[in-house]
Length: 212
Image (cartoon, rainbow, N blue to C red; front, top):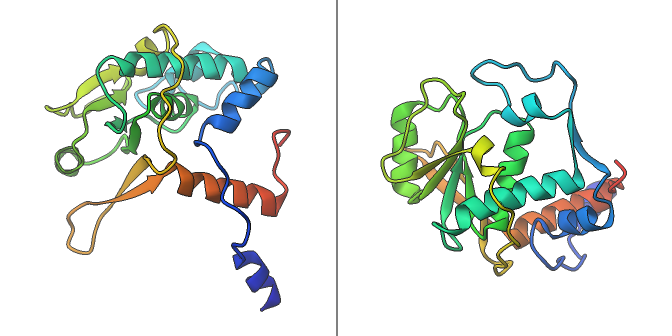
C-alpha cells in the first residue's frame, strides 16, 4: 500500500515548457550524439518500410533536429498554430521526425494507423478538421483525405529548416481517437503541459536520463 501511495504521489511541480524543448536543448549541447538508431535489417523496403531508415544508418540529435525543422518549415506556410496534422507512417524514425516537426510548427499531431479502414479514416478526418496529412509515397492503397494537404515525409525533410513556432504549454500537442462506446470515433486532446508532466514524472521515478 505504501509503495502504491508513493508511486501515485503527484506533489512534484509541473515542468515548464513544450514537449520538444528538452530535445532541442540536447541537440544544441551534443549535436553529434546518437538520438535514434536501428538495426540494418529492422525496416524493410516494402510498402510499410521506413523511408528515413532506408536512407540513413542512424540519426544524431543534430540531424534529427534539422529533419524535424525541415518538416516544420514545410508546414509553416500553409498551417497556422493549432492546426491538426495527421501522421500516417509506420513505426520508425520517419514517424519520430514527423511528430517533432508537427510540434515545432506549432501544430497538433493526430496519429493514424497505416492499416486504418478507409471509412473510419474518413470520419476521423471530418470530425477532427485535419488540415494536413504526413505520409509516405511508399504506402500502398492509402486513402487521400479530400480536405487535407498531403505531404511526403521524404520531401519534407529536404525543405529549409525553420525555427520552431512557440505556443502556450496549454495548447494541444496531439489528438488520439478512440472507438467510442457508440462506435463513432471520439477524440482525446492532450496538451503539451500534460504530456510533458507525464514524461518528466516517469523519467524521474525510473531514473531515466539522456544517456539511456
